[in-house]
Image 1 (cartoon, helix red, strand yellow):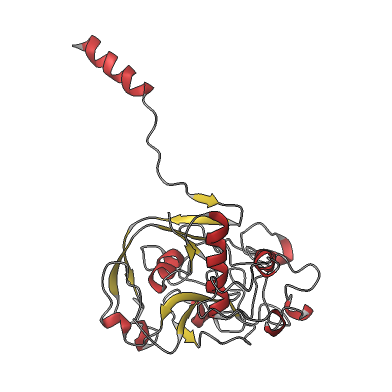
Image 2 (cartoon, rainbow, N blue to C red):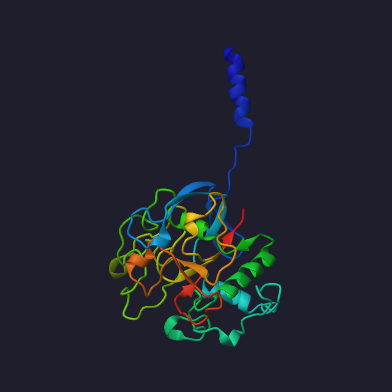
Length: 290
């Protein structure tokens, strides 16, 4: 019997190890971190936000990947410079946003993508249509499905399953995130700036979410896939909520360099017109299906 048990153990050792999803994937267009399937409690469990952040409710999400960083100027430029930029297949209403109508692209003070040394900074001033078009273009380039995250996916990716106030925990100061007062002129920081690697006068804490996504609080607001409804939480389905069927506004999450720390909470919600083009505080990050 002992000899049989030893043989069985040796045989198991020869089997290939079980492999789960890669914690990070990169299809040549930036790192994406894995958010596993499962439930989390969504909404303002601290009782400090607006009614639109309640009721707190359980959401059960399928697994997905989300951008480790906000989409940068350098990444967006690859789309902007592609000969197919204006292809109707990428744009929600079939019409591309003209390149000369994208505000801040040539604004050096805000590190616009058309200015020197701007590649590491987040693309800003993009409307919802432009963000969707980028994701569709990226899907065509990689053969994978990229899209904007749903509002529920965004919140889980930002705060995990323990209902923390911010991606890293419950306290905040300027060593964790870029919000109003972080610099003499409030504007975006390079994506991933708050990764904990800096020391001295620029010392920063790592502001990664439980899954490794950076800058999900502050820097630029991020478009989500959903239409916005103030009262959606009261009727939201438990499994993979897609947001309302229709609406006037699209959801924005994460707060920005021009807002107070209260607005950077992971449960905080806001929204804007999808065609809203001129706001320098708006950017996005993409999600990728497994």
